[in-house]
Amino acid sequence: MSKRRDAMKEMMAPIVGVPSAEQRPVLKPVVQSGALKSMNLAFESLSHDAEEAGVLREQLASGQSIVELNAADIEPSFIRDRLDGFESDDFDDLKRSISEHGQLLPILVRPSPGKAGRYQIAFGHRRAEATRQLGIPVKAIVRKLSDDDLIVAQGKENLERKDLSFIERGLFAARLEDRGVGRDVILAALSTHKGNLSTMISLVRRLPEELVTAIGAAPKIGRPRWESLVANLEQSKGDWRHVLRDKSFSGRSSDERFEAILRATTVTKTKDELQELLGRNGKVFARASLSPKKTKLVIDQKAAPDFGAYLVAHLPDLYQAFLEQESN
Image: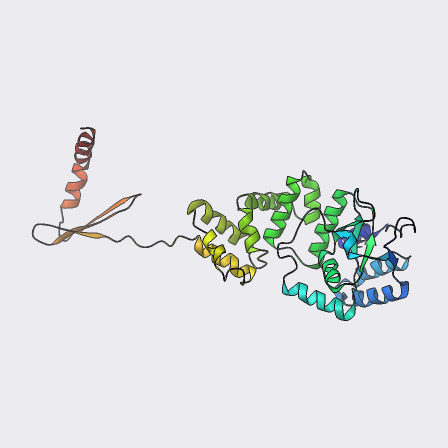
C-alpha cells in the first residue's frame, strides 16, 4: 500500500457521522445513490490513482457521510495558503464545471471552534466559494479536527490536487510559524524536509509581504528567481512601488508581475566612460574615470612609455602631499 494512499485513508477515516437533528438545523443529508454516482464519475477520472480512488469509494459507501451545508455557515481556514484567491482562470473553469455537472468532490470541514452551527474549511475553499457564488449548497464531509490536523489536511490536499507555488508554500509556512505552529507540523503539511523549509521561511521573511501579495502566486517562478529578487532589493534598494502604481500592473499575469518587479529592481551595469587626458602637446597620454567607489587610470604606453612606472614610483609621495594639504 503506497504512502500516499495510507495518508489519504488516514485523513478521510474515521469520518464523523451526520450530527443529530437537534444539532444540525441546516444540514441536509445528500441522497446516497446520487452522491455516490457523482463521486464515482470523479474517481473514474483519476485513472492514475485508481487504487486510491477505490479506497475512498469504500469509505463513502460505508454510510451517509456526505452532507449539504449552507455556504453562509462555512468559514475559511484560519491560515490562508493561496495568493490568487478566486480571480484566476482556473477558478472560473471550476465554477463553470460545478454549474454544469454539479460538485463532484466534497470539501472537508470541521465544526467551527466556539461557534455553534458553523463550520471551518480544512480544504476545498475554491469549491466552497464556487457553490456560494452559484447559490447552491456545499457538499461536505464533517470531521473533528484539531488545529494541527486541519493544517496537515489543508497542506496535503493542496499538494495532491494543485501544487502551491514556491512563494505560496513559503508564505504559508511563515504564517504558520508566526502562529506558533511547530516545525514538525509544518513539515508534514508541506511534505518537505527541514533544509527546504528553513530556506523558504528565511527567504519569505526578507521580502516585503506587500510586494509578495501584489505579485501573487507566480507559479512559474522558482526559488532561484525569488532569491535574485531578494538580492536586488537588498543591494540596489530599487524602487518597486512605482511599478505597483502602474495602471497596467494588475492586469498582467502573476508571472508577468514578478518579471516587471525584477526588472525594476535590477541595476544595469554600464562600462566606465573614460575621460581623455591631454599633454601640452595636445596628445592623449592617459584616460581616467571617476566614480563614488573607484578611480580608474589607464596610461597609454605608446604615447608615454615610461610615465606609468614613474607615476607608480611617486604615488606614495603624491599621496602624502595630498594628506598634508587636507590637514591644513
